[in-house]
Image 1 (cartoon, helix red, strand yellow):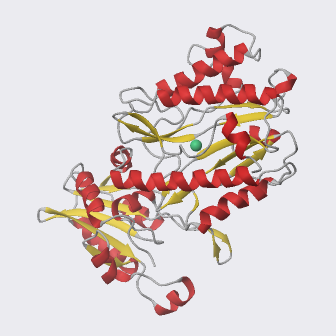
Image 2 (tube, helix red, strand yellow):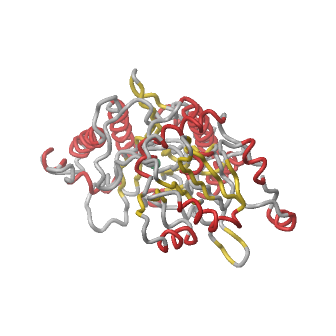
Image 3 (cartoon, protein in one colour):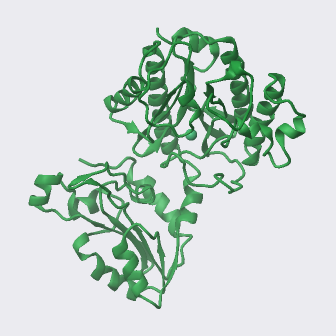
Length: 431
Ligand SMILES: [Mn+2]
């Protein structure tokens, strides 16, 4: 049966902080993520809404969280699936409104059956709404019908809060990082020439499940050329002798994600060209981690990574141009042909967490309590018709990704127990 991830005080603190930033004449509404049908009466696994989990710890299906300021206090309410023996026989036990109020950080709990009439009543006392739209058409329609009310998306306020992890959250993320590190070690040990990608996926995800966890995103296990596909998830090919395998896999605990990528030779021995690329990516990753300092810009991580990568690609004879051309005016130079993604992203209740720094978003200045990934990579697909490079690097894909906590005393690598030097990896693969 469901339980809270943290003590009630953690959520009350978050609610107080959040509500202090809301106008007092507003009604806050955060619906649950909709459930998705796979076929007929079979649903995709349900994932709770991260904002709802953040504010109330509620992670069961279908709830709607509301808050409003009444008589000098913010009141948090949760609309949940009511007790119903017939439904519970089929779908599982429900917590019910009484237990919800006594054990969860909420003031009132109501049946979802009463949602619309209750919300209509709440709306009479409010002048505006803070609503996360496109989650519940029922709620969206009600608000759209209420023509006199203005609607604001509260997520940017919440995102700013979620970027800074509390000590309890950091502890949870350490556990998540630890499990994912162990899973990668097990997959390295299980590797041999001719193993199928899905066998390594099974080692990793089987371990997650055995620890009461699950993946935080579909695992990527790509041997040889498959490692050059950034979002490869088919994971159904044999990994041949002499090939590298790129594994990007992480888990979640109480919703908190880890995200690790490691690359290793499936037969346990790097070739010289593989070593050259691996060392270059590792140097870039270490330079990027070193740049994870309080006060640095988000962009400084990408600058650190791309400086090392661009210089290295010239030194290896992969790029035949000046350093300026390799880097480009806006960090969009020749190096992007082989390192085409960002240097990292925020990590938390979402694997690509809120807080900015993705796509064209410039991202915030780095501050203590932020958790992010650092994951430079280089990809030389034999199938690439748009680029040329020395043949010896063909089929090589290397990405190295760790989870980093920013602190006053510098970056802390939460995934430090996952081996990543050439020597460590050669010693562990197949052993
Ligand atoms: Mn990542």
